[in-house]
Image 1 (cartoon, rainbow, N blue to C red):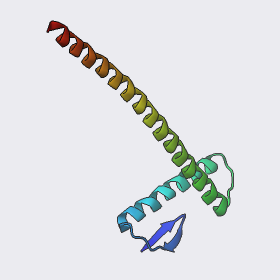
Image 2 (image 1 turned 60 degrees about the vertical axis):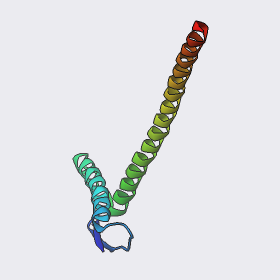
Image 3 (image 1 turned 180 degrees about the vertical axis):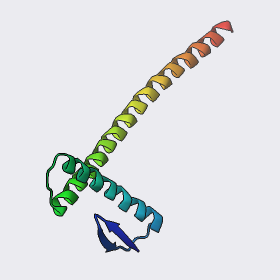
Image 4 (image 1 turned 45 degrees about the vertical axis):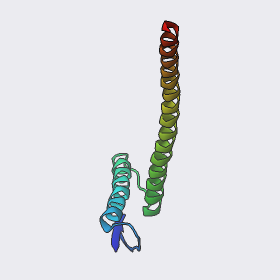
Length: 103
């Protein structure tokens, strides 16, 4: 399949669906366009290579932040789950003790 990134065409082979790979290319191009727009507004000139490197850094930053968020969320879920199980355990024990005390 052929994709275009930063105005350059690439022939890639992938086991992934072509529409998925095209979506990846579009995501990269979006980052490139954002950086290009920002630099043009600041009236700065940036080489194509530097533009691609900055886009790669932005995408990698997004990935690392999402991974950190995922870890934080998993930790919060684990902590909340422990608290819920602890409360349930206390309630079950209380009900069992009440039931046993009746007999």
